[in-house]
Image (cartoon, rainbow, N blue to C red; front, side, top):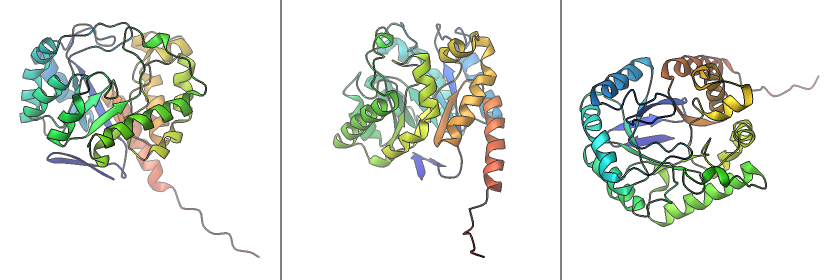
Length: 287
């Protein structure tokens, strides 16, 4: 499947792609705000391209558990100069990580190529109109509640079946609202309204989301379920992140959203080489 992002295209059937995370915020759980200023953010984006990123996901609001809503004006102030510079110079698609239609519209008007909505189009109903107006892909992520309440909403019968059903509802809503089917991607929302054990189960059964018929985006990068499962502090989760990304790609994920672009890119390159050596099963001959 070809994913069209304005003047860019990704062949999602050929390989899995790395989306580099660029948090232009003072309170990121991972980078601690070191890219909150314009110049460090632009420098990091260029580094990630050199490390193998096929897309850059720019966000101006932390959505970690317990985080507060950032006003749209402040979100725009943080990311607008970064997006303008990257769109004009980077040469790869720029995704906007936002729940707010106004922020998405402002950044798409500046040339951004994609919307990554962690609310699954639930936070701001006007987001569907923006996606339609600019005819760009939109990532519909699974979550429940808002960052301040989502970790109180982890009751599932079967987490994978329930996430798949709830994502299917959001996909139907998006399509019924007029977003083109080929512009919709899905994300199971690792770390959003899920326990550590539930996140691991989603990783193990990720291929069950293929029935949604949409490209899968996943962002396990450095998240707390690795810490709770393996007893790792945030700075010690690189290897676990790489393992999760290889597992996810092998189970059908099209785009891996990560902080450690260099490490994940190398691991996926090796996976691609192994896949190329796979031979189709030949029909057994009776003797």
